[in-house]
Image (cartoon, rainbow, N blue to C red):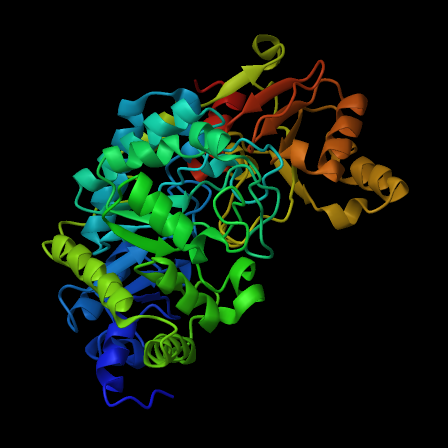
Length: 506
């Protein structure tokens, strides 16, 4: 523990740069106590959310302890949703918006989200993802990106920020300096972005420059190694990347936030407390924690680690005060937040309209659609990354059943297809036999990234060339002869849009 006579003051400073999560739909006593002791921010996750009214009560309870408290949320309004985690997002995600490529639409979707977040008391949204998804095998970004073209990603990043911030909620461009060209999930390991500086400047940095030009209030660092700038330290822990590049070359003066500090990419190297100290020393102003480690003990550990580091000289007091000052400046900006009337999640059709506009068709769709009878729907389910809530529903079967009674459905997982014999048997009994004499709809999600899924899809198409394929992830190469519907995301809005195409409602 800290032995300095200034330990209490140091701990207040340390608490002010933490942005922890917590468990429960009401604020735990320990959170309220820590706010009184100097905690300046909290972050909400889906476990804290039941309804918009409840979130408004929760944020009111938190702000009763400190009217200037920063309340953050990780709400991308796509596959990664917290405010609509139980039902699926009524807005399409970034890849769908980039596919439509209408910046006014993107700005309108983000403004609607901003009004909703502001109404329930949120002041900071950890979005948008400004990553260019240049690696199709990327396991963590995918449809969270606006696309594969830096120009498209740049203009939609800027539009999204303008829209969200027009409603009085701060945007946070992530994951600096760009997480789109990696093949490792930073929740579990340390990805490497091996491009040289010239390629990084052309490919990854333009959306962040656009974000700064749009006046983004915060930037989130990514847990990835970028040897062109720092061969030793991940971006979150690198003074060269957070200081020389972000502050120096790009000129960002706002608040920097770390990606969740408990992620394996940094904790496997330094532990959660060591990574926190190194992040603040490197130039991070706020440390996000609590997606997984949401206990009082974690906050105590990190606050004490920061204060101890100042006392020992591993972290300068000036750097901690600078970080706390930027957090305070952000809080001053957001303190004027006035909770307006709650905006219902589906009060506006802008999200569904955007999802409809993102639909693309391939194959002889005019001949195959609309469906002539209630179909059998087969949905292939792959494990998603930790950013996507396991509880968040997705797919086409549910909205299709509402529109076409008699629709049947089955979900198939990779463990059911663990051998060629098992796969052929499962596909026969669960997919082909129930679809005999009726339409077959096959729903996939990033089929090109999952060998088992691509193989099963090919087997089904070989047996049923008339099957209709709905891809709800990144579009892959056309399936020869098959009618394909591409939604460019798996949100509830995207599922509804696909169902409408299948029944001829559009």
